[in-house]
Image (tube, rainbow, N blue to C red; front, side):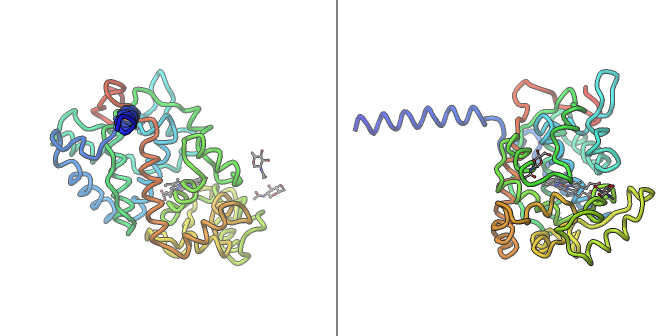
Length: 317
Ligand code: HEM
Ligand SMILES: *[C@@H]1O[C@H](CO)[C@@H](O)[C@H](O)[C@H]1NC(C)=O
Ligand SMILES: *[C@@H]1O[C@H](CO)[C@@H](O)[C@H](O)[C@H]1NC(C)=O
């Protein structure tokens, strides 16, 4: 009995410690202070996706790029100031990240309903989830309670985001540096079931890679004939770039990954089995994607008295 009680006490203390470590985010954070928050975000996202389906993909990517730089703190949304250079202008983001105006629109509506209450970081987390759902992907409860950064990091945005030329081990390490496993990395890469990439992101692959379907490579070279077309686009998921499903993995099996980094997940290495599994099992992909999104959304949030609730997502208060 005594030993049962001791165990119980240890478990209790351990769970209190764990809940301090994560205390931070909860799915009901704004239930009292902004009960209509989720509806406001969803309605704006419905309007944005109706206008342009790709924007659902763009919001998902915006959230990923936010979370990887100093945690999910809306640092990515800040414009240049006299004291810091924005993350927006770093090379993985410049001429490429999209969706800032959608966040501004949502923020305006949210400020009308619940002034100075909801962080830009949480709005971005909800918008990314809704973007996935509106394109046919899985849904999940978004943990909330993040606060907004007062600064941005141009240099980390240049150094800590994985690039399209990365090999498998570099991809795995860049996610490990954020506390995400190789399995999380492979599931999250399924985000490339939606959206587009620019010629500059796939030119080397179209011209120089060997692990690529030759007909597919020829089509991509046609999209990307010269340096003069840096911004011409191709779908990350060949057939269905506005449908969130597992066809991204099916394309990898036939060497039709658009980016070199995509094909690295199915190239004779450690992730081959998982890619095959997701390509055959949509449900498993959806489950792992959701778990990994929640994990990514929990990367070093600012909580409590850290950071602030920005009034305009582009500038610190
Ligand atoms: C695994 C490492 C990753 C690499 C190397 C990578 C790289 C890229 C690149 C180069 C582009 C095209 C950018 C352009 O040419 O403008 C892109 C687009 C995109 N990425 Fe990733 N990405 C990775 C992981 C992720 C993750 C984890 C997500 C989300 C869960 C994601 C979601 C997207 C989406 C949705 C787009 C299309 C955006 C749009 O159409 O506006 N990516 N990615
Ligand atoms: C992967 O890329 C890294 C960084 O560029 C390099 O150091 C490493 O040798 C590469 N690994 C393989 C297996 O090619
Ligand atoms: C292909 O590789 C060659 C040799 O490394 C390089 O000189 C050339 O610039 C590459 N072409 C493209 C389009 O990346």
